[in-house]
Image (cartoon, rainbow, N blue to C red; front, side, top):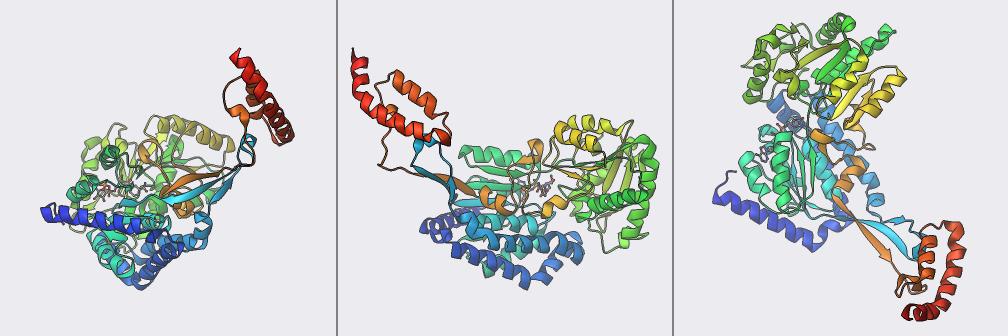
Amino acid sequence: MNTTMEAITEVEETLSELRQTFKSGRTRSVAWRKNQVSALLQLIHDQEDEIFKALYEDLGKHPVEVYRDEIGIVKKTINYTLSNLEKWVAPKKSRLPLLLFPTSGEVLPEPLGVVLIFASWNFPIALGLDPVIGAISAGNTVVLKPSEQAPACSSFLANTIPQYMDSKAVRVIEGGAEISELLLQQKWDKIFFTGSPQVGRIVMSAAAKNLTPVTLELGGKCPTILDSFSNPSDLKVAIKRIVGGKWGPCNGQACIGVDYILIEEKLASTLIELLKKTVKRFYSDSPKDSKCIARVINRGHFERLRNLLKDPLVAASIVHGGSLDEENLFIEPTILLDPPLDAAIMTEEIFGPLLPIITLKSIQESIEFINSRPKPLAIYAFTKDEEFRQRILLETSSGSVIFNDVLIQFICDALPFGGVGQSGFGRYHGKYSFDTFSHEKVVMRGNFIVELEPRYPPWNDFKMNFFRLAYNLDYLGLLLLFLGLKRSNRLTGVSQKQCNT
Ligand code: NAD
């Protein structure tokens, strides 16, 4: 779609139709929500081969990688949602201050309305559909804008979603920055954005015009701290996980992928040897010919990555790999030792198959290193030193901290997924997705059994003492409260007189 009058009309009509559907109340029914989420499950089931094909076309991903990182993730989310939705939708009773007894209170989740979801291209199926599941399960109508940079996946979603889901409630609008800007000019009830901090800023300022709440799932540089290990087999496992976390998911094009490693100087040469061996084991002597490693998404990103290596000091720091095949959009797994810290490769998110190793005199310095940069989406730390772990937890800030593993946080429905500071704000996954697309409405039910006279003027010492006591009461004070009430009712007339004299 382009931003012709036709496009503008289409966006406006889509929005107005979705708003009508929301107003009709249809999306509030739990049966409708379950039905839509189940339809998505059916889509994933029926279209598995098409998803494999689209992801191969856009990114050269192997079907196992596609199942692990996209299809499996979405299926798991759907099943988790279906088994918990009734519980999530139910109002939650809350304990109120005794002062309010016997009024009751609860939190009732209500849908926000019409929501806009922007997806990124690196996991175009999972990062598009996971928030859609949250939005639908919370009872909203949705526009999904997939990334134009994964065109096969974008058109797959645009073509199949209307075949399975209620197209008066869930729509896919394809396009690039122009269409995104057009979408951002509309009034939404929530915008959920996955992408870069640069575009995140554009989204947030557009949302501010209508005070639209936003969730920003952004990126950044995720450091991996590698401490020394006395047991060589633990070190081998750590290296396997690091290699898997760097080149495994989308060949380094992952928001929570390993961006760089921090290690003590004396261990660097062992690390490099083990990394090389493991890369060879996973992707053969010729990774370019391996079917197990994804391609760079497009020429623009290929050029961006090539530019990161152009600086002569950065190029001189390459200790493994470094070959680029423009025709096949392939960059070999590349390891760099101590590139300059002010070079773009160390100041920008790499989002590709380049892995800098930064050496430190002591591994404890990694805390200062991380703290002198923007807050990352994830910190990975391979260490058995409990004191060091506590320091990492207490002295750094990041979306998540994972000890002795990488990327596993993404598949945990019971844990919130999101960033902090420059890596974003808000969270999703499992119940957190439902919450992200809901408003927690407070419902209180008053009664006429008890009337607290001290809440009304005219004021006197008794009323002051009453509130001093009442706000600090625990259950043992309940009796006192009632005695106080009785007494207050008797004294109100007297106090009135006192106040008036
Ligand atoms: P991007 O910011 O370029 O694009 C994201 C979305 O914004 C796309 O749908 C795109 O069409 C849209 N967009 C592009 N220009 C726009 C504009 N001017 N106005 C409005 N919308 C616009 O990001 P990307 O290249 O798709 O993804 C890479 C980035 O996303 C990396 O920084 C990565 O770390 C981050 N990311 C974060 C997560 C996460 O869950 N936190 C997941 C994946 C990727």
